[in-house]
Image 1 (cartoon, rainbow, N blue to C red):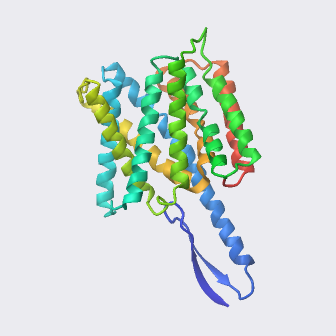
Image 2: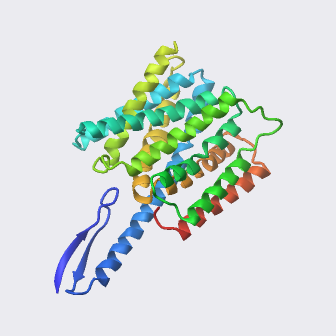
Image 3: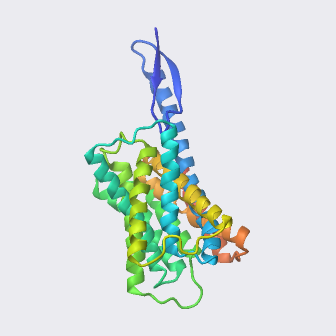
Length: 330
């Protein structure tokens, strides 16, 4: 009988265990590895929920900025620039290397472009269609992720497909606008493009072999860095002032909050969740985002809580709970 140490790497190597290895007997080892896998899944689902909780705190910081006259272009530019600077300083403090090879850098550039493109297209869609309709279209991205994974010959389980269907129904009910809605083709295409860009971002993080050796911290740093460059260039070419409307400590406090919580924390946990539980499941957990947005709006801004919102939230929570309880990683 020999004493061996088994080390299973998760997002941050959280679990270290020692097991007794008996020659000819593998059941103990298999049991321990399965237990560790389950613990990793718990961390993955927790990270997926954290993404949603923090991401839609965006309204908590963005609404005061908009009311103070800060433009959307300025807000996005400063938001991503602050996030990449804060993360870069933290990585330097930890003495982490920023070195990546050429193939990895190209893929990280693709990630940055996809994430920035998703945000840009979504904000542009608001100029043509109501925000509720745009939100509904963007939350097609779990379906798009699943379809892309099928194309890559990774087949989600029926439980995941059922959860996708239920969550979409829930989001449709959540985002149901009042009155007649004008279906502008440009707005529909922009919102659909935003959903597709975000779905592709999740798939690349999950499936790229070249990026598997890149830590979640470095991956997020490069994605934010490329994204911030694109936002700054877009702001410059659109004729906007970089610090237009930015003044006072309260304004900067909201900009820092916007950079840290719905940007930096969300992207770090997004990379972690996607690598542990897969792109499809992470995308389904994303339906918690409008739930968080509704909670923030109701608690902090006094927005009304209607029957369709309550029903939509209940359906969404049931769908996500069903997926977590019944499925394995896919």
